[in-house]
Image (tube, rainbow, N blue to C red):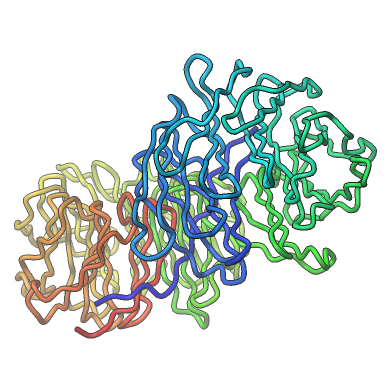
Amino acid sequence: MAQLSETYACVPATERGRGILIAGDAWSDSIAYCNGRSVIIRRLDAPLEATIYGEHAYQVTVARFSPNGEWVASADVSGTVRIWGRHGDRALKNEFRVLSGRVDDLQWSPDGLRIVACGDGKGKSFVRAFMWDSGTNVGEFDGHSRRVLSCAFKPTRPFRIVTCGEDFLVNFYEGPPFKFKLSQREHSNFVNCARFSPDGSKFITVSSDKKGILYDGKTGEKIGELTTQDGHKGSIYAVSWSPDSKQVLTVSADKTAKLWDIIEDGCGKLRRTLATPGSGGVDDMLVGCLWQNDHLVTVSLGGTMTIFSASDPDKLPVSFSGHMKSITSLVFLHSGQNVILSSSYDGIITRWIQGIGYAGKLVRKDNTQIKCFAAAEEEIITSGFDNKVWRVPVNGDQCGDSQPVDVGSQPMGLTVAAQTPELAIVSTDSGVVLLQGPKVVSQIKLGYAVTTSAISPDGNEVIVGGQDGKLHIYSVNGDTLTEEAVLEKHRGTITAICYSPDASMFASADANREAVVWDRISREVKLKNMLYHTARINCLAWSPDSHLIATGSLDTSVIVYEVDKPASGRITIKGAHLGGVYGLAFIDENSLVSAGEDACVRLWKLLPQ
């Protein structure tokens, strides 16, 4: 039996030049955001508690809590809205195809009976309002000619809906059934976000023309705007009201977040600019915000979420981040604190500490993409999509200088000898390269297509896996490799090879969903029939006492076997990562950490059966 103990969630998916939506539920102090096909719900006061919903068939764009906090409506790029229960087994209440293109925003009515959604579509259908239980239309929304980026539902009666978008228009509708009332042309660029104040008396729109304009909530007439003096210097992407309807928070491409006082006559006066942490690069542009209870949440283009205190804005803000793209590899370092390093192909390496969560990113001087990744205590070794391998010294979260080693062709795999970490083996498509520190010891061309390789902990033996499913064992002597044996049992391309920590066994896995544990001395099969995955196995991991072996697969599950018992007595973790598991490591004999395509890292406790 395996129990989920911690989730290090991914960050919201962002896009340059667009705002993103974070929804909030004030009762439980939770936020919801989207990444890939997942909707992530996490509590602001306990960021390690994250729940993830992954039932959408397409990339999710927006998720919102119902007014009572029991339901969530989420929408995707195909124009489909799913309404599902937030607790328990997350039962699907309804699914409606509301638009012909992507949905960019949706909002519940305050009574929880209607939903308005807007986005991209064919013809003139950019906005739709419908009943949440039957999907029947409640109004006609004419008046937009291009994609509608934001919509808002007035939180008090009489109900109103306001929409805004890429045609620079702000449209106002009365109802239900809703019909067009008036259109405002105050903005001179894309209108990115429209929001009603919680008391329903006003609404505000913000735009890429750097302006924020306030309107009367009942009639839709303009009543004022945010002062341009000390205003934003870039596009304003998102706006959020304070619970008492007296202030707003705005975020912009100029990398700042600003708090405004809304005066009775409807004008906005700058109260203060919040200093968001960051290096000042493009990734620090702010694209989303939320004011919830006493929390001010901002999200940057790089995915970093920063939480300020509304009652004490001078207090040091809390920041946390993570991966936005699929995680390709995972390493656990046994050094004082339990540090987990995960890397994604976009070149981001994140440090996590067990029990604490996010502990910063490793900033390399040369931030190239990462295909293969390995780490020893004081050093990380990476290779990208060129022919270079980097050995980078690491001190805490600081990376030192390093020079790349050219290995002649693109690396397919990388492993380090555990006891002598200066020795590493790199597999390329036609052979292997032996590295000693930053120098190439030997480049060996082999007469078959290589897919992966592993080096024994003492550095005396190398196993190379081929596309033909054979395992070739070589002994290492100085700079020469001598073939000792060829093992044939696999029926598919070898995808992973891993030595046990005590070096008495090794495990191999293939694309035909089978894994095998071998005895290293006799080279006989030690554990067979490990055939319980339904797709390619991507990764292997041994427990520190060499007693358990875990396999992670494209079928989204992780299976843990005991070496001394038959494979049928396994522990299966189904649905560990949406889209497949790509990284596995044991922390100790009873805890396992996994990572996958959903960009999340999860810690599992293994309970005795």
